[in-house]
Amino acid sequence: MKSIYKISGLLLLLAMVIISCTKDDIAFKEYLKDGEIVYPGRVANIITKPGNLRTGLWWNTSPDPSVTKYVVYWNNNADSVVVNATTHNPLDTMKVIIPNLKEYTYTFTVYSYDGQGHKSIPIEARNVRVFGPLYQSGLLNRPYNATNPYVVNSNGSVQLNFNTPDTININTVVRYTNTSGTSIDKILLPKDTAITLTDYKAGTSILYKSSYIPGKGALDVFPVADFSTFPQIFTYVLCDRSLFAEVHLPGDAQTYESGTSISKLWDGSVGPQGYPNIFHSAGNSGMPHVISFDLGRLYNNLSRIEETGRDCCNNPDRFEVWGIADLTNATTTLSASNSGWPAEALSKGWTLLKDVTRTDDGKNAVTTDLDNGGKPIRYIRIRIKHVTTGDGNYSNMSEIRFWNKQ
Image (cartoon, rainbow, N blue to C red; front, side, top):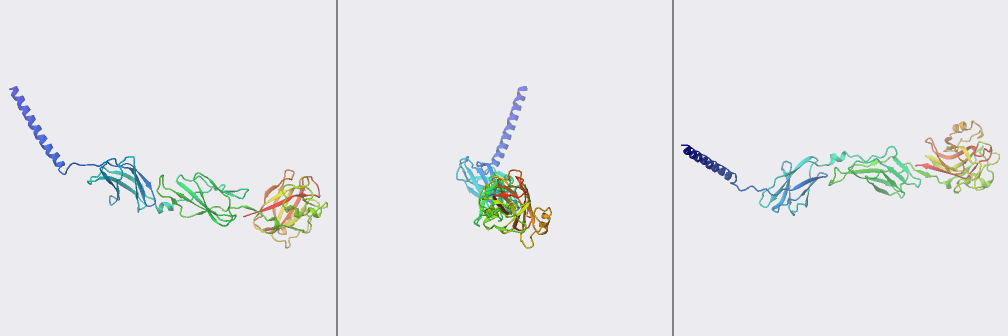
């Protein structure tokens, strides 16, 4: 009886297996009734390149030799572009530019297709930002160094100083007028914080405009919409000494002899000079005493003086520089040695440009800034108050130069 039960059980189990296999086979055949599903090899390593109302998609091509084309979809598959497959080397890069996009964030889907129309598993590039006018309108020109915007060098060149730029800065165009009157563009690179203009025309405007990329590997460069104006550059221009002329006002000191006149101060000699190639006051000049001269034209920003003493002695170490635009009613009546002389000079319209004190032997050229108080200046009076030797009459000087700031 036990053997009969065992045989019956085996027969029942076999019947169940047969029935089960038959049902699965029917289902599998139903699933494959339209043929086997084929997936061509997909692309790899897709990256994006931001651009101006366009974007770039770079990917490594599919190694599947059956792939004949790639299709890129966006806008929920409403838009697409077809790219023919020209290589199947997975080390090659397919580069696709998609133009005419809006300033928006997109998702791009790439499929590989074979010649039978089978498509691969998709690969997506998500959150792809496309840049345009809105992005450009938010860009600002690279800031200049507000603490020290420029330096005027002794050779006349001008150094413009800028702050460190953003990492996406490409360059900054600096536009200026050169000494020939021609508009020049120079490029300031991101790695540089200064640019030197060797031929800048004093008094003219300097403009600058920066350009940026929205990200690494961007297709397009975005310039700032407008130029900005750099802070006004003031340069010191040497006054033309060929225009200088002697002026003898009442109370002025006399010269030691005709060969040591005031005009020796602008005869073009360089460095401390010896007698008689100097200005030398007369022996009865007293101290303080005054000398006067004409710059030959009006200067609106007379801003600097350079005074050079004699090679030995009687060099001024304390003196005042006064200026005025017109000599009409400018004559003082008090002696320059009178303590009331400065007040009278002010009342006559003179401006004290500088009260100079030298602490050396007075020989070498010393440059001092002047303050014209915003007034135009043409005529100069120098009131010599003390000389290095302590002499009560004589003062000697070799040269005087002036600069106008413009």
